Image (cartoon, rainbow, N blue to C red; front, side, top):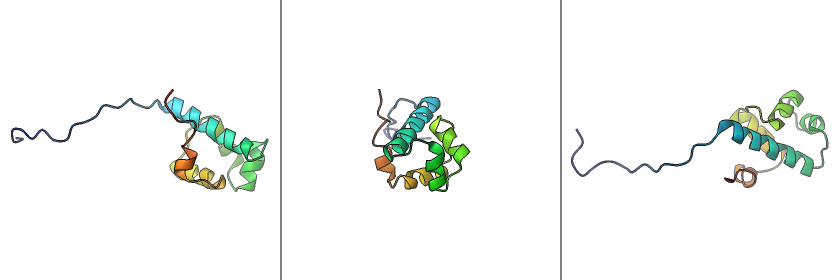
Length: 92
């Protein structure tokens, strides 16, 4: 039984993220960064950075990605996590 007056920390209600929408945004961000890096083909980018070409293509299409794979992709762009997520993920 909780003591009176102590109801615990207040929970703030935040909007829930839509998984499919966020994966699509992730794919758009990866593709934009690849093109900005001068690669017209995802296959060449993936090959040059030792990433599975088939998997990288799926990431750009918005398929699910493991966190460790995302880190590898972000490292290939020479970015930090905050830099990577600084564009394309703001609420619209």
